Length: 206
Image (cartoon, rainbow, N blue to C red; front, side):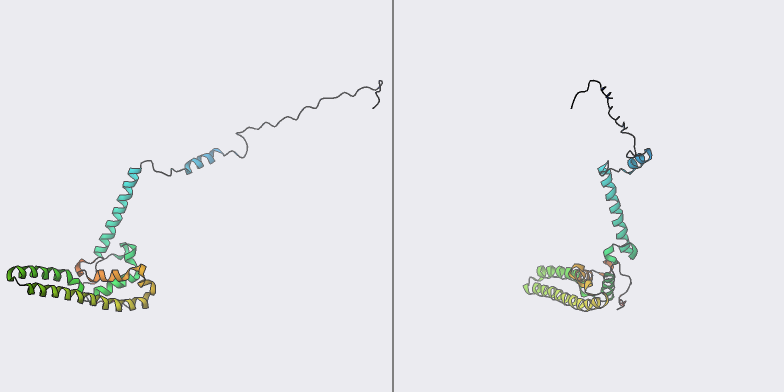
């Protein structure tokens, strides 16, 4: 480029840098409004209660109250307030079926206790080993009769349960067999839940 002394130099005007936008960190749509702050603060709840002992005590009290209410319901026969397991339809059927029949097992404990007392008395008074053997034979014979009676009961009851409620009612997880035989060896007046009928013979509908 050739230098021209007669040409005036163009005035170079300095370019001012663009003013940076001043932003207020507290301003803008990203900042929650006062109402939103209050809503967020109100929604915060502590995961752990402040007083753990008081909370645990209150939970135990509620559980105890529920258990007392369920126990009272089983004593009175109030089906609506019994535990959920006792309200299952096949368990209601099992209870009605067992309560309707005469079960040898419900007299096992009194009979066994009576045989034991008589055996001790006879052994000490008579001093005869045969007397004790006879009494023990009677007790074991009665036990065998109870087992046979429970087996016959469950054989009929199982078929009725399957026909009415399906295989799920007698599956291993349902514990229907243990529920039936444990109720059958209890004396009628001591059974829980309480029998729905005062006397035997009220068979459930098939």
